[in-house]
Amino acid sequence: MADNFRLHYTDPNRRVYVSKAGSPAGDGSPERPLDTLPPGNNNMQCVVGTGVYSLPSEFGGGTPGYRDVELFADGTVLLQGNGQARYQTLGFSGTYLTGFRIEQVAGLEFKAYYYGNPCGYKQCEFRVLPAFADSPNSGMTGYCTFEDCVFVNLHFSNDQTPGLGAGQGGNAQDAHFKRCLFFNCTFTSPVASVEHCYLDATSAVWAAAATANNVDPGADPALGHGLQVGSAGWARLVPGNQCADPRFHPQALALGDYSVQAGSPHLAAGIGPAQYRQGTAFLVSAPAPAGAVVSAANTTFGADVPADDPAAPASVALLSSTHPVLATSQGALVISPDASTDGTAVLRTGAVPHGTDVALELTYMQALGGYNFNTSYPDSEAQRQLDAPSLFNNNVFVAGTYGPGEAGRNPARLTYGLRWSSKLDPDPTNDADWQPTNGQFVRCEWNTQPLYNLAVAPATAVVGNGEPAFDPAQARAVVCLWYQLELGLSNAYYH
Image 1 (tube, rainbow, N blue to C red):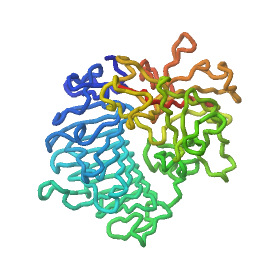
Image 2: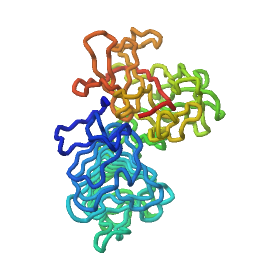
Image 3: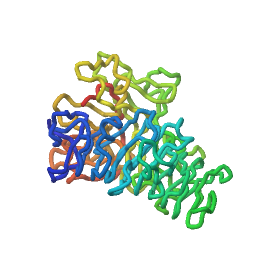
């Protein structure tokens, strides 16, 4: 099978590729990937393609000890636990993860073997279920580093981790955190250091050293919330740190958007993950009541900004929808199952402002909400039913789907359609106003920066980074005053 991987490594003795389109009989190459991480495989660089994978069977196997395994998410990769096990093993000595989201866990063990090399995590998001946040649920047994990560409901403990030998458990004091965000997190004893991190009002972070962090002004030290350095006690404001409103987008934050608004103290101080910078969150405003069919007449695409902000951009109209899409009681959108269609709907927005007098670069486009993209369901494509789609794969954020054997399924990326303009007032009905695509909506990838290749001829041959033909070596950033989106929702997504 042709591949759609973006990350490539030249050492055949170390590299392994994993894809939802893979097979146990694969050789681990991009063209013949495996479907799971091989257990116990040490000295390995593993590229993991877009999709939902399970813990521990696919990523937590192997024998405790030195592993030297580097795992890189190539696209949106979600690792899900069983929702019950605290101290779920995530890495042994020498394990490094970059770009993963870990959810549906009751807690995590970030380093499950005391000896050997440290473990490292970059640009990862860890979300423990709220029911387990009030008591210790996570730890590590040696040196760990965390950079540009997000933590939700983690309760770190230095107590001995269940199931490990004497003297091995829970040495969270060897942990170092840099440019991280903490939401409802608790440290029961001090970690080594936190720097350029944010603590929300319900977090209690204890460290031996703390530099240039921001504690939410709503934190109450009397309740044990805030920042504690050494044995100085809990506080909102600690010397060398600050206490200020972070200026997140209020509605979007609950949906997992961690970018900040203009004027945030995080921007100048370099607080928080490097992948989340200043941006404006546009949220689909679904019609009421639940079950209503989305249309241009009853649905808008609005900027998530305070109502009293005089500089707030107006809501953008949702111009069209190709197939039935229903609103839910939570304000989300889902495909209306219809066996007579291809199972995919595309919603087109109006022109979205991105600059005033000077064109600006689009740096990050994030899909917010509870979309599903676990192509393990159904087991075979022949079992797929558009009129009764799998609950795990019935509302996928993609602008289009690929057929069997096509490169776009290996891995099958989450995508949207994008076109842009540098005219002062482009007409959404005039393709000539939207250059360099000549009106074409280019397929780009969610949860990353939109990039494209510009071919010499023909003028419409523009390829986005959500397409298999995209060449990262020829990537161009999108710079514009306006852009339009085609938001795809599908229940026909398959590996």
